[in-house]
Amino acid sequence: MQADTMALMRRRVVISSTIGNALEWFDFTVFGLFAGILSNLFFPADNPHSSLLLTFATFGIAFAARPLGGLVFGLYSDKHGRKKALVVMISLMAVGTGLLGVLPTYGAIGIAAPLLLLLARLIQGFSAGGEFGSASAMLIEFAPPGRRGFYGSFQMVSQSLAFGLGAAMAIGLNLGLSADAFASWGWRVPFILGILIGPTGWYLRQRCDESPEFKAYLAERAATAQPGRQTTLGQLFSEHPRELIASFCLIAAGTAINYVNAIFLPTYAVAELKLPILNAQLGLLVVSLINAAVAVACGALSDRIGRRAVLVPALIIYSLLFYVILQRLVAAPTTANLWQLQIVAVLLGALAGPMPAFMTEIFPVGVRSTGASLMYNLAVMLFGGLAPFINTWLVQVTGDKAAPVYYILFAAAVGLVGLSVYRGRPSVPGVATQPAQ
Image 1 (cartoon, rainbow, N blue to C red):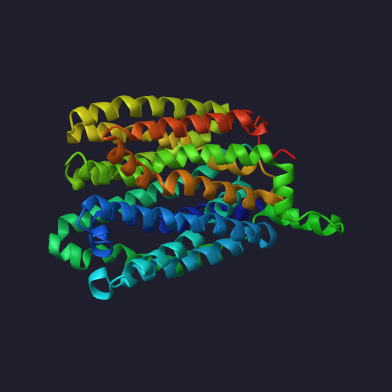
Image 2: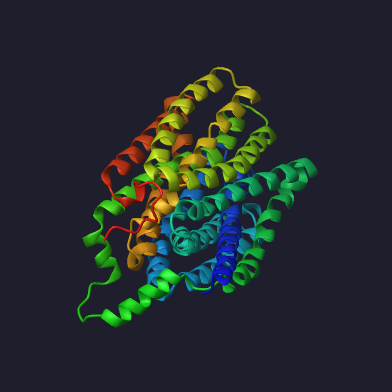
């Protein structure tokens, strides 16, 4: 492929991966931000806390489908190609999103409403399961030598854009509609708009080529295939246990921080601290936009000084600042203190930037999408999808409004353990790293 053609295709891959992934995560974000209204419409109960817990449980249960989706689409991607898997996933996401937008509420059809809501979330979770591994593999396999951190960071840029877009949509609807109008039909608008995920994402991803590195792998596999060779999944677990552990732990830390800040914190600020929801959503919007730039900068920085040199300080500094400022917010629940806590999440950008490259380059091409997808989704299910539920439960059980800090400290410790488990070439500065064989 000529240099100009390759440069054009790289831009196309970055754009399609970023926009397509952002569209997928947008609907996950909106569900969390609208948890308050959804709890009333689909899980009515005498105790508002019970309704909220049921809504967050539905949010978390949907993540149970993600490891299965990650496994199915990861294996498909490693066998048939990144492009084919990404096209199928984004089309399936549109089905789950469209269902959310048109569901009758509990008042209309009774118990069938929350069951259908759960079904829609399971479809979303299954389709999103393979997104991280396949999209990240696509990005780093198209990256020029020594720039995998920079290219991989656009995976996390897309998530920052999704959180920002979701917050902007929530702000616009809250400002533009009355409370009755929002409860009647306004909450449906983002989900109905999300139906555009299908045709838009399909078009963007169909125009991309398969990655050169994966095509070279297919050619080599065809030339050297031997009878009795291990399956991809068997090879993954038998040959790469340290990579699996490191990937799981790092994502566990990152996703816990991400979901506490983007999903739990806005609802917590309203329910526990009695702060205006609009202020919490505005803080999330600003931080999400900043994080998009921080992720790119830190992804590029990791290409120069090494992945761990960026990841470790980000984890430590974030957890310490979160501890200090959350205590301050609980003692004095003001919007200014809330925004200070939210702005600390710019360190999530420093953590997120190098993460996709680290997560994918440590695996060989033939198991890359499966390994990254499976560990990513297991960690997100346990530490991200359940984060709003667990933190809401912690606050209620302990009576300590600062209880979420212990969840963050634990998650950061898990991430540091994971980084200590794997010692490979991805941490070497300035090197076009290859997965350890």
